[in-house]
Structure formats: structure tokens, C-alpha cells
Image 1 (tube, protein in one colour):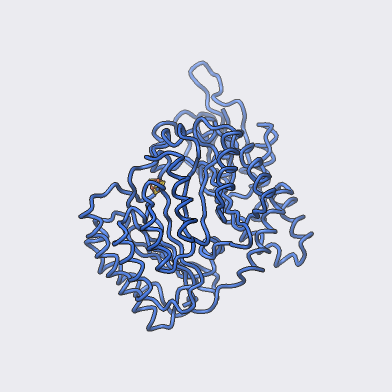
Image 2 (cartoon, helix red, strand yellow):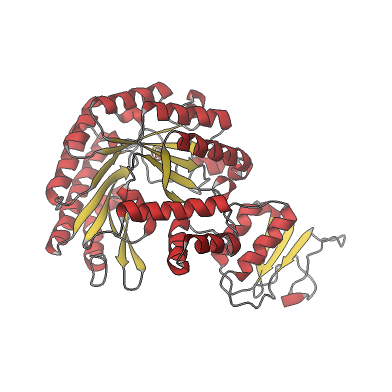
Length: 481
Ligand code: SF4
């Protein structure tokens, strides 16, 4: 058992995330120097705390890391010392070093801009942040690729996200606002959503703001009928100024919701990119994770999407799923490559608080760390051999091994929406239940969130309030709009 004591004024979130990468929560107690002394402590050691003793006089702790006396004012000093101590004591190193944020590519970009050269940026990432050379190179390469292919977002452009919070069934690892809704409910939701589209499109037109990308996500948008989808997409096309729209994506995540008619509707309405998300091509795994389809449904959906002429298909897969080893993961990727996906997003399983998985095994991601590490390495190699390159990358809490999600693309087909949302340099207008819009203020390099309620029934009831929030907070002076 570890006892870790830190100074009260450290970056608590960053330190706690770093500790969690090395140690399961039941293996340590964390205290801050000014924290109250817990009941089971005695003595008056440094900062009023000493190792706790049980009735027999034995200490509860095998190891004490006390960094509360660190007086350095350098931002990452404590994190570096913490990393060094945890690494030495556990015997583990971590590829991401002391980085704990969601957007390491953005940080690498800033470091590159300040350092002035690739070599200096690489040195800073590896020496000051303890990032492995391979990960540091990946970050810098992704950043430079994004700059080369997409550059900065055009003035007055935004990314639009439209959320459809319905799915056929709920997946084991899901933490999204997804509901198994009845047809009447979907209709009521769409009526409210159309009103929000109209209201926001009016605000945008009045200010000359236009979408650079539109992303219809969820949930599973293809839970809608072909008619509903057609109505929604044509409505989007009419409401917004789409004259400079560069990308329109529809998430068709669950193959059991896809048919040729819907695929034709998607294409007819200008969405050249869809996302079919197999997660795994192993039937047993699909059953375990609560998908109501088989691998054959994925094959059929891919074939049909190709037949109707979909230009760009993204496929999501997850490393670290229950019962899967490196070979299973490689088999899934190989088949997806074979089916001709232009984009492949490799996710690392993360155990989220709102998922069913957390109830079954809250420590599952710790157990999967080594398997995931091998799966991701094998996946990277396989994808590179088939001409795919990483184009965006992000991390989340509670990911197996503290690893990452990486989007790969072939033939220079990076998704604009995915890149922009991760670089945090464009206003994102999110419509529908659970949508979190972000207004970007370039002068202050700051984002301001404007959230819709998550529950779709409350969203329907309080639509006017959602619109008012946007009107007052989203398109203000000083934002990119
Ligand atoms: S398809 Fe996606 S949104 Fe729907 S239940 Fe599964 S993980 Fe959640």
C-alpha cells in the first residue's frame, strides 16, 4: 500500500491521473499537505501526518512518497518527481511520461512552435515530459501532417455536431447519452431538433458564420428511418450556408441499423463520409459487449456502402475488449483493411463511470494494460504496412494502460471534424440532447462551453432555453465567429 503526500497547490488533476496510470486506486492513499488528518493517522510527522498504524502498531503502508516539501515553482517539477518515484518503485515505465491531458498533439504543436525545430521539440518531449521517443515522434508527425493538410480553420467557419441519442441496444462500455427509444419518442425528438437547427442556422446566417464540417453522431443516427434521415439531412442542407462545407459525416455506427436505402439517402444529401463501427470482427466478442449484430452484418454493411458509392468509410475498433488477444485484434484490423475502410480509428478500451462495464469490473482497464499495449503496437505496424498513417490522437480517463485513441487515414483522407475538435481552435456548435458547444476565443486562446441538457425528454421540454443559451453565449464578439 502506498501513501503519497503532495503539496496542496500542485496540479491535482494531473498528479492524480498520473498516479492512476501506475497504481490501482485501492493500492494508494493520497494526501495533500494541508489536508485534514484522517482518523486512522497518529503522530505529528511532516505536515501533521505520519504513517497510520493499526491496533497492533503496524503501519498500513509499505511505501511512502512524500513530495510535500518540493518547493520548485516550475510547473511540472512535482509531476516529474512523482513519475520518477512511481516508476522506480513499481518497476514500470510509461510511454506517455508525465503527460496526462486529453490533447497531447496540441501540446506537441505548441512545443514545436516555441522550440523552433523538430529536434528541439523532440528533445523537450522526451527529456522534460519523459514521453517515449516513438510517442513523441508520433505526436510531432501528426501535428505537422494536420498543419500541412488542413491548416488553420477559416475565419467565420464552425464545426457542427448534431446528436441523435438513440441506439438499438446499449453496449457494455457505453457512457454516451444513448437510449433505446420508441418510434413516437424519436419523432418528438426530431421535431425539437429541427427547431434548434432552424434557430441556430438563423443566428449563424445573420453573422455570416458557416459550417466547415457537419457531423451527425450519437448514439446511432442510422437508428432513424430512411425518411427521417432524409428529412433531417435535407433540413441541415437548407438551413445552413453549406456553400463552403468541406465535410459531411454521418455515423452509421451499428451495422444492424444500416441498409442500402439509408446509405443512398446519406449519399444523396451530400455526406461523403460515414462511420461503420465494427469494434471487433469476432462474433463472441460482439455478443459479450452487447452489440445486437454479428460480424456478417458488418461485412454486409461495408459491401452495401461500397456499392452505393460512399467515398470515405471510417471504422472504429477497440483494443482491450474482453476475451480478445493480440491475434484477435489483428484479425479484426486485417479484415477491415481488406474491406477497404479509408479511415480506421483505433480506440483503447476505457472504463467509464456511466458504463455497465464499471459495474462488472471497475479495474478492468488495469488488467488489460499489457494486452492493449501489444494490440496497439501490432495494429500500428499492420496499418503502416497497408498505407495508413495516424492523423489525430487523443487520450481519455481510465484507458487501459493509460494509452491512447488514434485515428488513421489512407490516401490523405483525414477527417476535418475530428482534427478540429481535437485541436480546440474552432468553434463547435453542438445541437441536440447532450451537445456541448464550444466557443473559441482566439485572442485569449480560450474555449467557453455552452451545454445542452443530456436527457432527450428534458431537451424537448426546454428547447427554447437551449436556444437562448446559444444566442447569449455562443456567437459573441471575440470568438472565431
Ligand atoms: S453504439 Fe455507441 S452510443 Fe450506442 S450504445 Fe453502443 S457505444 Fe453507446
